[in-house]
Image 1 (cartoon, rainbow, N blue to C red):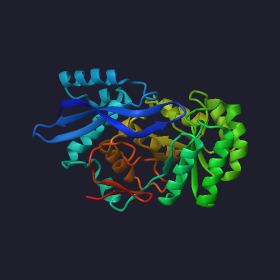
Image 2 (image 1 turned 135 degrees about the vertical axis):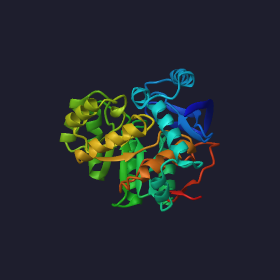
Image 3 (image 1 turned 180 degrees about the vertical axis):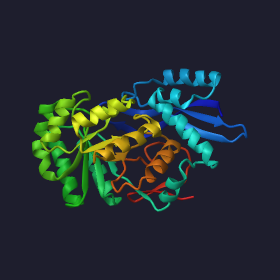
Image 4 (image 1 turned 30 degrees about the horizontal axis):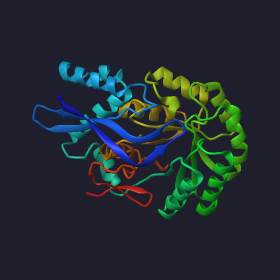
Length: 333
């Protein structure tokens, strides 16, 4: 098996995608092609996320050139490579082994024909834009909606979440994603107001590295979901130490950021051993990468809504059988 080719691609967003950390207008990635001795091809996507991935596109390009020259890495070599590179290479191997276009994990692909429940995502913007998205997600039938917070005033955020609760009813699952936007006192001020609205979880309420404060938030009853905190933790003892010290109710797993598919598998095992809930989230991949992540996630039959995109953010994209139907992602050959 060899790395036959790689090329730089770009996806343009229909509208700017805003978080508390970045504004995304386009997304670059490397499309790679592996080839075996029989001439079969496997495709993968390497797309570090600006502002979150420790590795740069330039670093990934240099590593890909090295792999072309030196041969495909061993499992040991792969385990020490940047997360987005591991994701793309593991994705391409899975595609090659499947022997089918757009297929990566057979069991997951078959289960996707019945559908995989996902959350609806409310992107940051001004209050009116976010309210429009709330109306849209309710109309589309989502029973779990995630809102990115930290970009507008507390009063406007409260109005938005209250509107969502009123329109979605008491059974609507509301997730908040802070992307580490607050210090502990700032977040607790918000939480005192928000907790009466039956919030399911809050992703990364404070910046990474503050494990003791994160543990204190958990002790105060905040349903913390670790996300960015997992980035760069590749060694088993690091992962165990993080989970033991923070004791989060949930972790959010992104193959592009958290060690590829093999890294996410290990996080899942460690979480389930400690009765920590988890779900898998995409990280602005193309439809090709999204298909691989959806098939991977569907293997686990996790009852929680997964945080997967739909490809609808981009003006152009790969044509795959993965389509959204209401709140479900489905494989429709």
